[in-house]
Image 1 (spheres, helix red, strand yellow):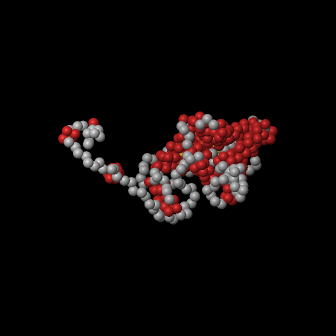
Image 2 (spheres, one colour):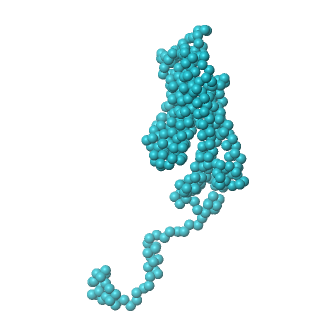
Length: 397
């Protein structure tokens, strides 16, 4: 077709943006406008966290963003590359090339200039600018940090709001010391990685961040390691929705291992001989798996706490449906204002007996039927002309 290969990512991105923001509602099975607009509203609330009351959906979405750092970095590179390093001539999209010679070195002392891509090394400013990349890395953590501060403003409890904010502050330390370490080492090619004082601060902040986040996952987000847990389920909790206890133990182990790999990739990828980009291709899908499992236990713990604190009293289930009846029947019972009564019978298709409510007219007639009748009442013409409200018992004799 003679089109530039750099044109196709632009076309794909344009299609995604148009589909995401288009106002068409039908067909719902194709456009899903309600779902898209819900996500747009929640994203807006996340990025303007200090200005709005934070709900569970808002900080849940903020937690998902912290597992999508590669998406943020890819979007940063996409915008930077097509905005600064590409020449547009109609349908001909060409990157501005910077050709380094065989003896030329591409490092912090001889970097690729802004607006150019070195075809020999594959480097450019959009991927090596430490300050820009570091800023993008802290965006998800900053969203959750501001949400915690807003929740503390609405409900001034030091724990868990400020202690949770402290967890995200450790991410600032990790990214900040990492950027400072790259700057210090980049001043001269003779400086070793281990000669930098920021390297050891980087390692220390990494250890603190990993320990803080892992313990918060287990103790706070999942509510496990409860001292009141039954003896046959140690280190779990008293109320659990998923009946197989080894699910929880396996979740704790995988969270430890995968979070360790993820933080190592984000924080220390450039400190090892293994290429950071290669490590990223492995750890990014693993982080999504970790977050996928985390979501189930986080939602379970939220539901258990809501029921325990009577913030939720409606009969809902987050377990697989294992009873007779249809999903539509269950949804109808959930949405009914009277909730569910005689649960066992209803879930098996039996309808409980309902007492018929008497209308106002029937209640009046029934009440009058049981009133004692006044006998031997003789009304004279004089009495008939008196106002009824002024009648006394002597007037009725």
